Image 1: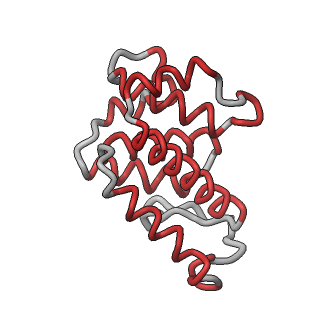
Image 2: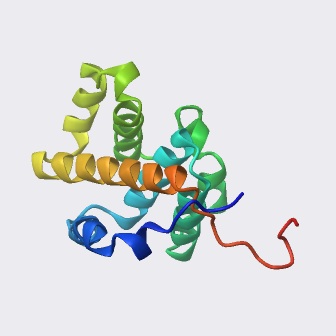
Length: 153
C-alpha cells in the first residue's frame, strides 16, 4: 500500500479548523476514555486502519484495557461497557451509518438519558470529526506506523 498524498503537507490551513475542533472537544468535559472508544468504533466501522491504530494506541496509553478494546466491535454482547458508553457507542454507529439508520429515535432516547444537551452536541461533533478523519485517511491511503521488524516487504 502506498499513500496517495499527505493531507497535512498539501493543505495545512484547511486542516487547521479540524485540529481546533479536536482540541475544543478534548476539553469539552467528555471523558477521554469515552472519546477514544467512539473514535475507535467509528474507525472500525469505516475500516480505517490508520485511525484504529492511532486511537487504540492512545486509549491504551491513557489506561484503557486490552480486553475492552478487543471486544469493542461486539460491545452489545459484552458487560464491560457502562450504560453511558453504550449510549455513546449506539449513537456512534447510528451516525457513522446514517444513510442506513437515519439516527433512530431509540438511540437518541438513550443518548438523552445519559448525556446533557451540550454533551450530545459535543459527542455528535466528535463522531462527525472522526468520520471526516477516516475519510481523509482512507481516501488518501494514509499508512499507520509499522515497527520495522514487523513490516512486510
